[in-house]
Image (cartoon, rainbow, N blue to C red; front, side, top):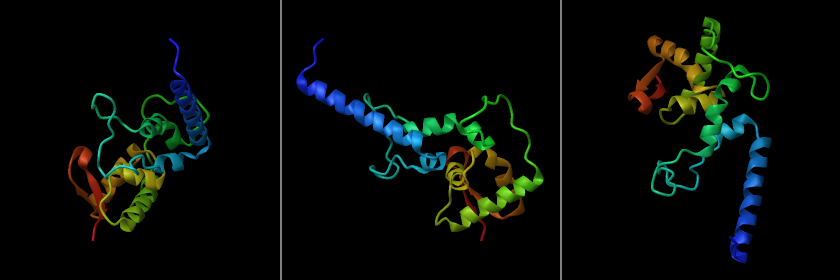
Length: 156
């Protein structure tokens, strides 16, 4: 089916635009991509919508979650994908992560979720479970909410 001149121009511009975005993302560090807020142009908390009214996840979130395991192990670009569970964290490593988490929570103006803490610390969210649990048991961190709505703050 033949395209109209307008359709052809719009298609060409769109292809160039997408190619430029992909090039920028490929050239960016993971920390830059993970820290990018896709909701900058929207009202805070407003969901992204696509045709048909269904909710869509930001494309960067899918890319970030796909490489989560490789980032946590320091093998972002190289090496095979790991299967199965990660090895346990040593007590020293959990204590070091706990200190970094506390620094982030003390600097925050409001309670933060695990994903926000993870992006500030530069690790995958699942690596924070044990240090957060330890900090809560020590009384240094307070938990607010349940399940996906859980946020954390530094204890006063």
